[in-house]
Image (tube, rainbow, N blue to C red; front, side):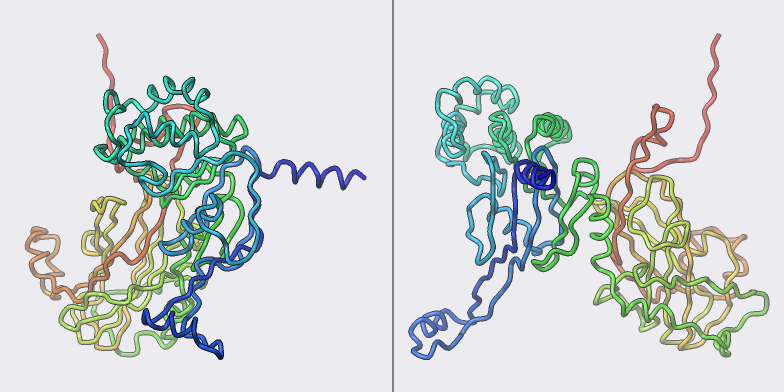
Length: 467
């Protein structure tokens, strides 16, 4: 009896239940094939089945915030349209309890010829709110949207930011049972986004279930209890938001790179290295396949000098990781195979933020370390570069470069200006946007525990004097 009561309570608390949902589209090579298939007396198929969603199941509790993440084309928007009733699934069942408010594509549900006020009433009728109730809420909607006299203009004249302000205000002021947000807040300014997240937090405390689709993993970790990771229409992971984000960053991994990364010459240098002073330091190469990235299909090979064969990223414990807290150390491993004889090897990394701004770049020459003075064709050169990731929260990408410099110039590196050193480098290979990783905020209990503000931490000191 007790078990039955518990199960009944769990079912009562479910706002959305998705069971074995699939959405299949028929793809035809030519328009005529559709007609030929419909008229064929032998039921011959002229199409291929494309699964936008394939047997997806999950449930959302009342007052729970759930993220849906995945690469472009993974089925996120299709799933949201099925939940809202815009699309009908090919198979499976959808159970939704309560009023839904959805911000999907920019402009969805709004009539561009109507004014802002007229669209408020239109949205209310779509969500099942009568005109009298909407009239009572209009002052609050206008205050939240804050678009001034434009509320009396057709929305076709709105900027994207104004449109989102009005759409979000209408969708949330009516206090829906389920709120769906699909990348809509990406076009708003930072102050409006903060206002929106405060509003969403208020709704969640009042038992509104929130479904959020975004490419910002920081928002998923910060605002979601659980997350669904989709890949090519299938459920790759369903569980805690932190774990889902970690799996998201491992999407591009491949076993092939792991195998490439384990090619260690047990016999040493095999006669391929020449040096009079360099003492070889054998790098403890990662053994976990999850540490390695799938290399881009094409890398820029200059002068046919070298190719990149392996790239990995670990934390300070040498565990595979794509997520770091501000100030933690990331260990980058990368390997190049020479297609020709080369002089002193130089390897380096460039880090870019989500706006594609270069925030850090450093190579082995700038570390002033010893290196082999000559390398023969066929040799593999490995680098292990440790970087303290004292940078702003967010998602980052990195690129790799491999070059060489003449022995006589390298031996005089402490006497020459860096510009002269740089001019004497020969670039052999560059791999752009190898992969991505994520930095989360390091937040303590006081302002002194926040490490810094801005893009990066700059070493320094401060002194206070008072008279």
